[in-house]
Length: 174
Image 1 (cartoon, rainbow, N blue to C red):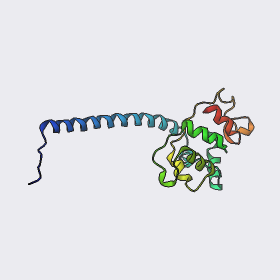
Image 2 (cartoon, one colour):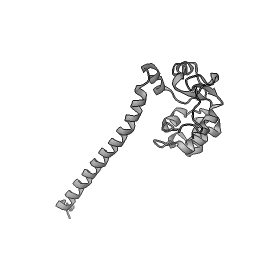
Image 3 (spheres, helix red, strand yellow):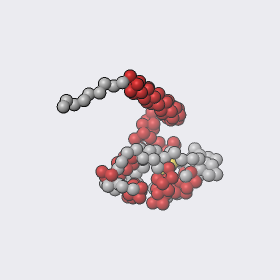
Image 4 (cartoon, rainbow, N blue to C red):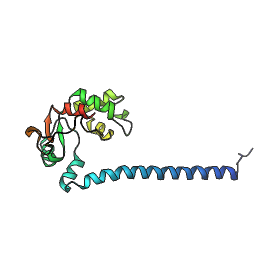
């Protein structure tokens, strides 16, 4: 007996065309949403000088800062505040604000606690773990910023290296 071949009916073809059209419309709507989000980001980034802008794009959260990282941080200090968060702050941020991109099973990161441990200890898969996480979107701190936010933290301002005091700021912003 010969294998049976079925001829697609007109209704089946129209159904596939309708599904493809719906998928194109959904993709177009998704692109519009992505563009709107990116537009807000671009507006903020365009107000910064080119060199600090590039450094902000290159920086990652590093618990042990190397010399090159410290030099880059000095250049962007007027735009950022940074420090060394403790395990509790990292755990709170990842549980509340952490969004992931892909599966990390091939790096033996199977659950959120594995991810927290990898980020907190800067383990062997630290780069993959931080690339997995989307940037954290934090709120303004409870009680607002200080009056003189254009001064360094040690001078009574808000930007620059806070060292362990970053944990208090994270709690106010999370």
